[in-house]
Length: 325
Length: 294
Image (cartoon, rainbow over all chains, first blue to last red; front, side, top):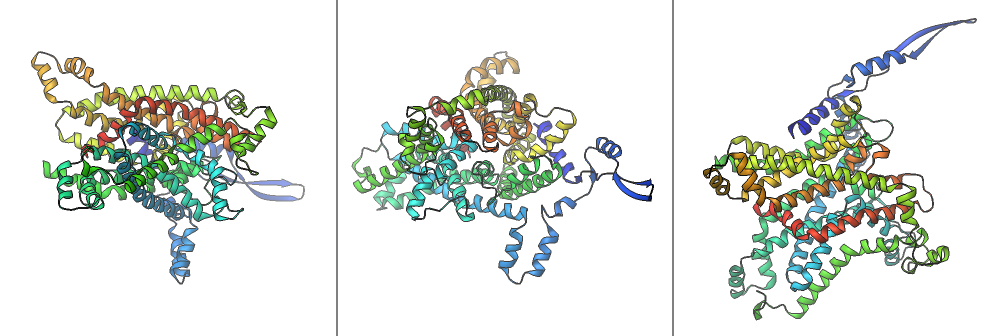
């Protein structure tokens, strides 16, 4: 594990501070019948020799981190200086790829996670009240959206939501607008991706909460009822506190998973309206020009983001550990 | 438990619950049935502009082929586009990933659960952090060395990468599983004169299968569902199913090509259906195992 994960990490860090060599230029003087002229040409041999001898490229330090495709410090400063109000500032920043991706990733993470927790809890409470016979079937069906490959799941929904698909048709009919297309508008694309995210992850929350409901302290519920608690109050004051550790667990796992949202963007073909950090990395790596160092830098920034997201948890675990020993 | 009169739900509440669950079941299952149904139609029916009932009755399919169902999508995907090759690749990758990561995970998880040193904590925390990182961040780290050593595009390297990405999770899960096996079990074996290895071989191995199968299921799902790693690290002819489906959509748009993708999607989902059907209990217990312990 250490070899295969720690080593690539080192490789990522190294790559993120290097950039491909520039071509070696030579100036050649060509003399013709009408006098001599100087030409600058690329010395192919020398360039390829240099590139094979040092495949990492030349060392540039943190330059890539600061360039336009990543943190874009220069552009942000300029936008800050030019913009006279917050709207203008955010408009300017929204055009920078890194911040655009960041905006979507964060929005996605922090809308999907709470919605899916509430949704999962509702399903779990509902299923728990069903009769034994149909429980099994309902659980089987509920697992499907989670088990299915994310790319495949998003493709299936994408085809249905297409303006010629059944859901797309239904939405057009509901909105009474025959030209409505979910793919054309940024807001609707985001909503679509968020709905997909909830659809995909709610089963996970459901299964965990459902298992938690099996260990519900019946005597506490009974005493709450004797004290005159309504059904809603029982849920609010007995069941939810009982499930609290599980809610934290689900929230943690889902924060991590939603932060790396990637497949739905490919599946929904939504690159034009929504990009995520993982998608930027994928895009840099793919295509004809494999921009390894740009991708490595994005990777480092993503890992940094994950670290920030995880830091409260790590801090608490560390406190627990210190308390134990 | 629910038989007492006080526990019984009033009618309107029960209606609400059943209504909500019905809605959820529809949401969860309908897309799959719709796609399965549509995969036997021609594209004009699957995406019907004129009338959405065409997708159900298959009007255009009937006009073209004389029957409401057609297998052209499947034939095209599996034979013409050689989807069977990707299916074989997927099974190779899944098989080796599951075997390798289970072997390492069982031994490692057992060792970690039985040793009381400080470093186990740190090792597990590192595993958790690695689990939190998006796999694609590591891919760029692998790419350059693989290019340099000419290892890019073949199945074994992809298997190694997938195992590496999967390992933290396997280790974490099997560690907590082995901790739930009482220590007294192998201690008593050692009292009876077994060596540490013999204790593992004759006492732990017979009781470890439930945990191993559950972990194996999740490793399988990871290998099966992966898109980022396989699409980056495999050359065109070595593609597994998921990147292959993505490639169907990426190629220039021609009539019927989308139906190849639809048929391929249905084919790739079928094994997962069967998996859930047989191992539902295991999957549920696996998902909750980590949670209940907190």
